[in-house]
Length: 108
Image (cartoon, rainbow, N blue to C red):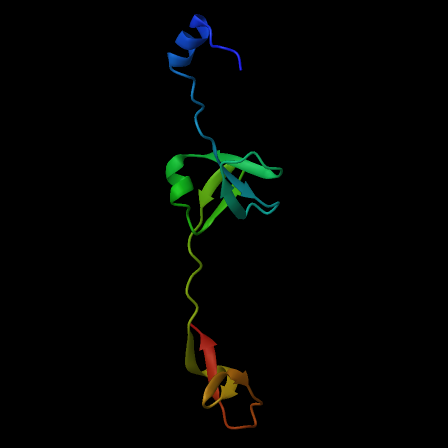
């Protein structure tokens, strides 16, 4: 093992250059997020900030290389109605013929 020179000793004490981490959002062809990473991986990605990286939005897409927050899908509720899909009286997930006992359900 070789000894350290005086120049190498003083160079080791100098502040070293630290690279700034790069945060990335990888996404598919439709712009839907796949995963967040700090690694340089194959695939489409955009650079994002640290805040977005640690707290990613649940409803977002990449459009024109920009992260766009989308609205949550509206809540769909069923309600009994005079017109609608006839369902079994005790189970809304079972669709029955209109000629059988039923409750009709429509979207609200």
